[in-house]
Image (cartoon, rainbow, N blue to C red; front, top):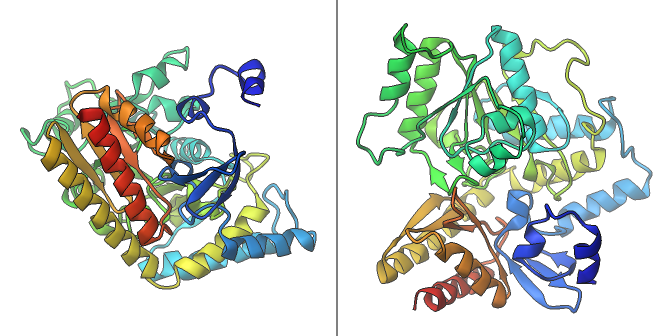
Amino acid sequence: MNDIFATLESEVRSYSRTWPAVFDRAQGSYLYGEDGTPYLDFFAGAGALNYGHNNPLLKRKLLEYIERDGVVHGLDQATVAKAEFLSTFHENVLAPRGLNYKVQFPGPTGTNSVESALKLVRKITGKESVISFTNAFHGMTLGSLSVTGNSMKRGGAGIPLVHATPMPYDNYFDGQYPDFLYFERLLEDSGSGLNEPAAVIVETLQGEGGINSSRPEWLRGLYELCQSHGILMIVDDVQMGCGRTGPFFSFEEAGIQPDIVCLSKSIGGYGMPLATTLIKPELDVWEPGEHNGTFRGNNPAFVTASEAFRQYWADDKLEQSTIAKGERVGQVLQEIVDTHGGAVAKGRGLARGLGFEDTNVAGKVSKAAFDRKLLMETSGPDSEVLKIMPPLTVSDEELEQGLRIVRESVQEVLA
C-alpha cells in the first residue's frame, strides 16, 4: 500500500516519511499499523488529541448525535450543538477562571483563528503592524506566516511577508539583557523606525519553535508593556491550550487576561477540526459576515467538545494529573541530560523537549524511538529538539514505557 502514497500523494507529505508505517486504527495512547503493530503515541496529533485517540466518553456522544441525524454542517447557523458548546465552555472553563470573552468561530483550523485575530486588531486600531517573536509559529496561511519565525516555512510563501516585526522571545539572549530592553527602547524612540503596532501575538510556550517556555514574569511584563502603550495582546494557545501545560489556558499561571485568545487543535475534543477566537466583549467590533468560512460550524466537534468540558474540566483532576506527569517527564529528561551532557531539558506540563547541541541528534533519536514503536517528533529551527507530547490521558504505565524507550533511544544514538 505504501506505493500508492509515493505514486499519487504530493511530495509535500512529511509525517509519513518520518514514520514509514501505514496506520489503520487508534485507541487511547496508541496507533495501530495495518498489520496490528501497536505504536505508543507521544505526538498526539501535534496537540490535537489531548484526550487520546477515539476517547470512548466522547465517542458515545458523537455516535448518538450522528445516529439521530443531528446537524453536521451548519455554517454559523444557530444549532442545539453550538448552544451546548457555548454554555458548557462558559460554565466549565470561562466562568471559573473569571474570564469574559465573546466566542468567534472563524473556520476549522488554528491558522483560521490567527488570521481572524490579526484582521480584528487591525480593524480595531487602524494600524497595520503586529509584533511577533523569534522562533514563533502561528500557521501556514499568509497572515499567520508573516508572524512566524521559521525561515523554511516563510520561504514557502513565495511573496514578501510584511506588516510584522519580530522581537526577542524570553531568554533569547540567555539572560544577558533585561526583558524587553530592545522592544521598549524602539517603542519610545521616535527615531527607531518601528511602525506603531496594533498588537503583539505570542505563544506562552513555543511548540514548533523548540519547546521554548516563557517565564510567568516575562509574560506579565509583556502584558503590562502592551497595556502601557495601548497595544492589544493576542495569545496563540492553539497548541498549548486545552490543558497541555496543566491549566486549561497556558497563560493562567501568569495571571493575565489577553485581549484575544486563539484556540484550535484539542478544542474539538476528538481530533475533529474546530477553532475559536476569544475576544474581549468591547473589542468584538465585527460586522455580520465580515469574517466567515464554510466550515466554521463543525457541529459534531461541538458535541465532542462539550462532553470534554464536562468530563475533564468540571474539576481540576486533569490539570493536576498533567502537572504531575509533566514533572515525571522533566525528571527523566534531566537524568538523561546529566548522564550524556550536550543537551538541555525544556518545557512544562506535558509539552516537554530535549534539546541537543548537535542538531543531528534529535532526528536520529526520533528514528530510533520509531524502531522501538514510539512516535515522537522533533521541533526547533534546526529540528534539534526532541518533542514529547503524549495525550494528557496517558496512563502512568504508558508514560513509563515511553520514557524507557526515550532513554534507550538517546543511549543508542549517543553511545
